[in-house]
Image 1 (spheres, helix red, strand yellow):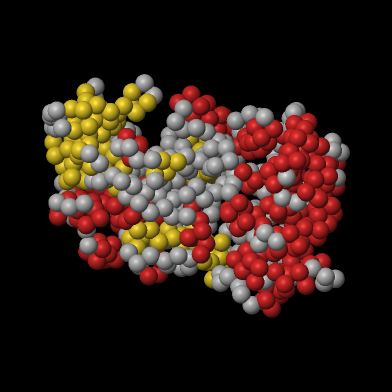
Image 2 (cartoon, one colour):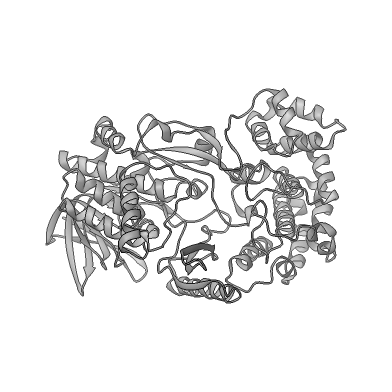
Length: 617
């Protein structure tokens, strides 16, 4: 007797079935042949497993092929994908329009050369379970439904489709408003010198599970890019990638969840399968809607480009309470913050390879994945280069602007020296970690005549949750300057916005009048600081149609007022009245950007406006 679980009329249904006719039995069944799934199929087949790979699309490889993103942003090279990339590069120059087409061809050949099979244009329609164990699935292709039994199933759909069908709990988006990371669309165009070039565009926020909203978002993204290119006669748009880049979807509840606290603390694991490596590449300018943990690092400490090594174990690939199944892709067990880091193509290919190896070894033993000896999997992954000691880089600045290891500080003299510079980020975050242990020194430095150190000390106290620096933070906000820290190559934070964020974090009621004037005074936008920075800059803002400083100060002021209302309920009515008036019209939106609805810039501001008005009721 099996349970059959499927989506019907928008809801998950379960029925008991006495007998199921399976057309075939495989060792490893992989649903989703994108970035992770394609490599998982190659890895499992290479270990001698009988493998069937299924995908709803007509091709495999995900963003690295169908999405036309042929380059890499962080992650470290290693494992099966390296040889494939190198051969695809050679083959692409000789036989194909581009290496992405060659890579798709290469991976399809690698999958089948070991006897594995592919079923493309195929959808999963249900899951068969024996108690808490997945035993098979129903599939639909070419107008018919058919059933496949398996020993191990790998959900590589990137959206937890099979895990959800099997009953695994999932989460979606950030806690503040449920939004996921902005999606990207890729434009392929002909450079005047005859070379083919591609450009990734942040294209807005979209619910990929709503077909109408998804279609609308794609059309708007492509239309905006076409209008942009018509203004430049030197560029000829060839096509838009058929597969857009959805950066985040449903994330499974795994046996072990990887948290931001673990990552920043540098937690190591004894049975690592592979290492992720990247900065918290969250995209999106609405920092105020992220978690306090992420804002402390990204905003208050200005460490947006600090890179972190993340050890990933089998338990983070294992859906909690479910047997016979692993996850591989950007939906493995982690929190929303880590999901902005642990999603890069190199890392997801290594994730797929790890899952494929484990699944094949489990099938060979007739065992569960958890029963596979770690040493056996480790040997295979080490031999392929998927797992090496060099992949554990700890915490680093790792780009052409700044390349050095990061060690959190504990010596007050070192912290003092750094707080007095325009690159104080590591010292600021160290103050958060030290807490009250560094508070006496920070309070002493508040009396220093030198402004940089005094302001740095106030920020250090604020990030540690100590209100002693609040008067100096209010002074920084009142001055309203356009000064920004220089720790990173991009998305550096304005000191005024940092101070506002920390006043909200502290729930500082004494800043009520100051913050209210920022969001309510219609002359705020006329201040000189909002018009000082006119040129686009990668260090601050790459969009000529977005006033970054105005948006950050106003959005942080609005959310800081909400935090103060939460800390002081007696002020809530007054604060809600002020916020309602400030965001009743589109004044702040028009001061920030003139771009239309559905564009990335417009939706960024609208996210904050909706959040504020929802709070106001």
